[in-house]
Image 1 (cartoon, helix red, strand yellow):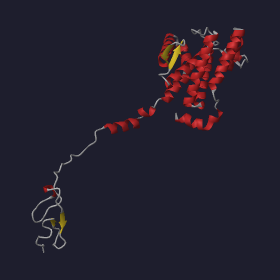
Image 2: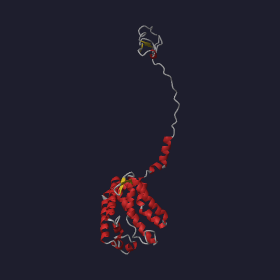
Image 3: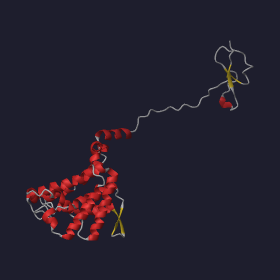
Image 4: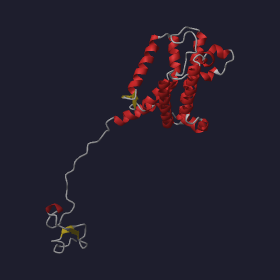
Length: 281
């Protein structure tokens, strides 16, 4: 992620801090609107590309008002969950990268909506239009991204059943995978674009240096058995030896040896013959 590290050093001051809080507020506002009149979203706020091209540009943003659920309890629980997960992700990767992650997901949804409109094809779940593209995949992307960071975290299902988040993610991915392979090409494109930020997040977090040719060669060279020359073991030989009696330090630990300064040459004697020997001339 060196590229994003460089971008972060330049543009981190523009990042929105605590972005998950703003997303939670948007969901709460959307829930209140839905409680007041459940037709307002589809008629005036949804991601309807045809209406956008007619000048209703606010729909590029207001489609995010769609709440996670129409039930008050479930909507509150899911909104709080996405807030907690999103905040945890932001704390781990930083506000700038989290902003990039969220806005990449939003951009993927917008591109998907325009593709569906351009093809004007009835896609399962979209009913020939695009206003059924909601922030559902954006919420799922937050869930999956957190799983990549903390796969062993525990979620209490219905507040009583502890389940590791990685197992729930497997279920969600299996459901999306079924829709991906079961649907036509256009629906596959829509799913891929809506989860584009998750795929980018996964790829950027992988240590691709390990599969680089230079790194593979380095590991191969390191694992090769080193060429070692045979070391000839030389038996221990004595260092000191008396010129008269021939005794060495191996003949006793208490033996001491000295060189005679009066002998012509380097002659060594034990303490017994140091002063009694005949000097070599």
